[in-house]
Image (tube, rainbow, N blue to C red; front, side, top):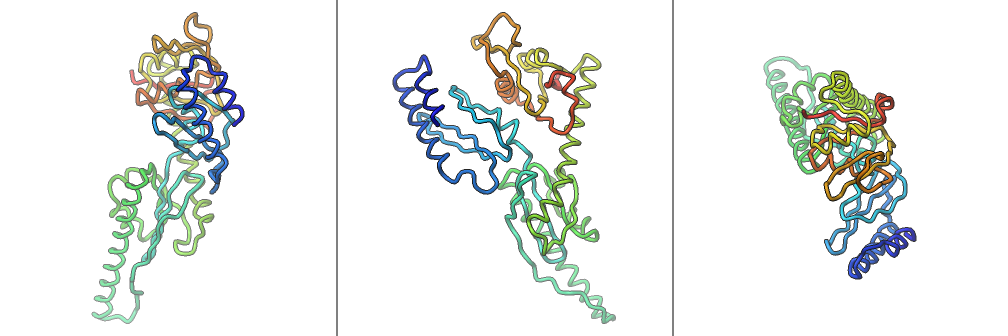
Length: 325
């Protein structure tokens, strides 16, 4: 935190009240970093502090990031987009009597719920009593699947989850999907195979990981193909820092695509609200134009996607954008 304190003291243009508030913010952030904030698999943290706004927010990241101190009037969101915004997943495991729910980013699921319903075993005595008994058992199984689907939807709403995976025996797959809320059906992207009742957390994570990675690769591929089509036809695609910044200035960006660890210098015309390439003859020079580009994309409700599994952006200058018009 020495660097943060030095930055506060050397920052020009601050009033006495602003400098005092920043000093207090530095101490509050210091207390956070000296706590156990990095527990439970956290690889990095982003801490946002603003005493006058009564703000102290901690965002835990699953990937390491470069140490950086930023003093600004807007939040520094680049590390969240580049490293911490993996989709949040819901994994539903169920058999004929037991159900378990897991949630979290693709590489760090946690089990949140489990239950076992009183479902009788099948038998093979035959006759009318056997038929009635079997119907009773099947009714219990259907009720159990409905309970699992109801719980999954409650967890989905509580955690604001993005995607769904199902782990269920083949004979129950259609029945379970039929009972899921439509929001969950729309977000279901695959299945995993594990022992529902006895699988460990590591077993579930290991089973989910390749399915989740395949989904991420597919989403990146689709976005990159749309970009290539747009760039190739001179239509809804922008490639390279100059074209992308121009599209952002015009609020035309639908999806901002950034190579992992991509950096570029540029200029910001704060008065006009424009982002410009480094060679422009106006604006203030900034070391990294990616951060303000991400902010501008978010402001215009565009999606910011970090491309980690394909190298299509390399010959395009490391950054591209699928355009709305």
